[in-house]
Image (cartoon, rainbow, N blue to C red; front, side, top):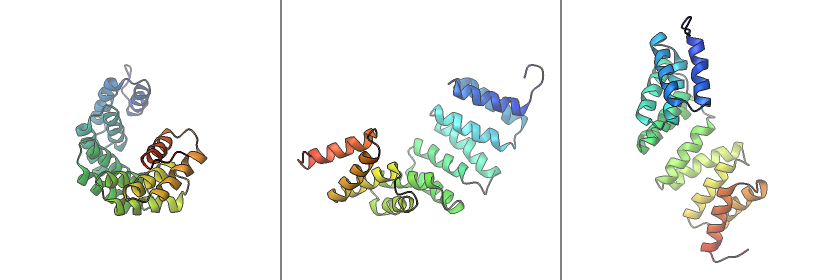
Length: 194
């Protein structure tokens, strides 16, 4: 770079800076990338990811929004916008962006999972369950989805269904701490010591 500025070299450098947790340096590198190629999609995606790691959700939203403007058929910037909105505690905007992402890419499992989690936090259990059931129809062993379905069932008072989901996770992966905690807390709450 000292000899000749090159966008691709800056891109590699930003990636290495992120790996080494040199996030301030990565921000400077991404800023220079944007100056060199203001229409370069890669720099906006990298910028959004660096801001996410720094928990700079305002900056992340700006990068992701520009990424979405430049690549209108790509669902990824909408997911990044949703993550930024989530960080800013704008649940409604989070849901809107995730729904747009799913509309663009019908099988976007990460968007379905995140939308279900946000809906669960908003106590919209029926809607959250629809997204989880969609994922589990494709990936029946998805631990994150099984865990969330268990939590939804537990919140709806369906204790046996929740226990089944938690036990299925623990049986498949004895190292899943969240499933053990959920299972243990539910058993204690039910005064069942199995």
